[in-house]
Image (cartoon, rainbow, N blue to C red; front, side):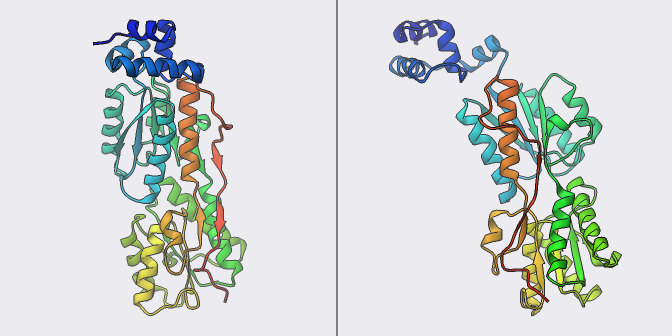
Length: 333
């Protein structure tokens, strides 16, 4: 079995240079990197990951916690983080917390037990105090889609309150005053912030907020269907429906069509997230862009820069501005 010493001799470089190549160090020139990789290939050398981690105190692995493993929102986040880290010689260990405090704790402890060099967390149920304790610990931690007071440099978040405001403002500007809202679970900060933005837009327009104009969902398609059925009984005069995410908007659209509504001439619907399905629904969904790809990108580059000393190719940003995506489900009265 070939050794690192033989690779060093065959490539004509030092042991330290071979080590830097194996660890994905960006300070090695492409010419030198190729010489080392060619020598490794010709000798059939397989680096010993355990030995590497013991020598460098790094495992070259990053833990990623998401809420769910299904859906285009989390799929986009996972693929973005994995692609950027993989390009820089790092591996991603992925686990899910399922929006449950106990399961999020267990998932994070699992990632810590695998000696991950850093953690990227889309955590929704654990407390802010718990996240602060993690950041104060010995593993670098970043948080996606959640603003934690006192941790501005560790969080990557869209302005959810502004996004909720923009969605409802667009409906009001189209002439609607009978507006219902399907929220996400309100114990979650992104859901409560989006609802707060909805209320702000109504207040600015002089439209009274009514408690029975809100249905609390769970961000899943079935909740959109349930919400639409609820409003048929409790708010039959509505002309516009704002949904806190695209998946629920999709469910609401299905229920509305089944009830005989034409979209958007009889009922306008606006979503939030701008996931892939939004552009393939019929009619195509008007929505708010939630830049989960950009947030995942920033989190990955933050880890590379702060943990592995690999300079980010773009400036690190922490707060993202939502954007209105005008398509076909918002009509004028």
